[in-house]
Picture 1 (cartoon, rainbow, N blue to C red):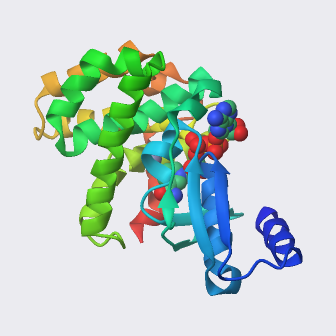
Picture 2 (cartoon, rainbow, N blue to C red; picture 1 turned 180 degrees about the horizontal axis):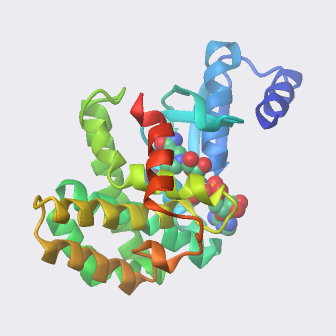
Length: 253
Ligand SMILES: NC(=O)c1ccc[n+]([C@@H]2O[C@H](COP(=O)([O-])OP(=O)(O)OC[C@H]3O[C@@H](n4cnc5c(N)ncnc54)[C@H](O)[C@@H]3O)[C@@H](O)[C@H]2O)c1
Ligand SMILES: [Zn+2]
């Protein structure tokens, strides 16, 4: 319905292919505006101006756009690259602390993918990022963007390396699905727990030293992010339910 509304408005405004749609807002606005730009006249120019930490470090980069269907999240979408992404950290001044912290969950992911020095930097300066120190925020956002852009440049359509960006997300999506997207659990909070679950599973399987899993947990907890499912209100959760949601995950196909 929202997509239909946006498309109607753009058509009423007689937007043409050479015009530019600017998405000013968080990931929800970026995903919706990006998909509308992708399908209107088979593609009009599109610029992302992300205003949440999550959108600045993740959703505005990489060209994935999507809307939700009754059957599930992000099931309808397109790969459509913006002409430009313009991130201004000053926009984060008004972002609620919980949203900022959730975005930080994705920042931690970049430290875990292939950048141990960045993870060490976060251990030292994560509190500066979360207290909105401009220099610390700029550094965290720049490193995260470079990391995502490099991975997407190697594998735009997620045939290989781009899957690295899904670290922790299979668990995270299962938790989000069980919460019914009712606001109890933000995406970045689910990612924080998902990252820890992925590490804990790796430790169980003997693939990752237990100390590293504990170190990640300490860092997440020090920032106020949840690291385990006992820290959130999801009373219906069980291993069977998690497995059920995982089988529904669109990454399975
Ligand atoms: N396309 C991708 O690659 C990709 C990647 C990750 C996530 N996503 C999507 O992004 C969405 C989450 O994005 P999000 O975390 O930005 O959430 P969001 O867009 O819902 O924004 C979070 C909240 O912050 C408010 N807000 C935004 N900017 C603000 C500001 N500067 N000051 C005050 N309030 C502000 C919004 O109105 C909203 O209430 C999810 O739907 C997810 O599926 C997409
Ligand atoms: Zn994510």
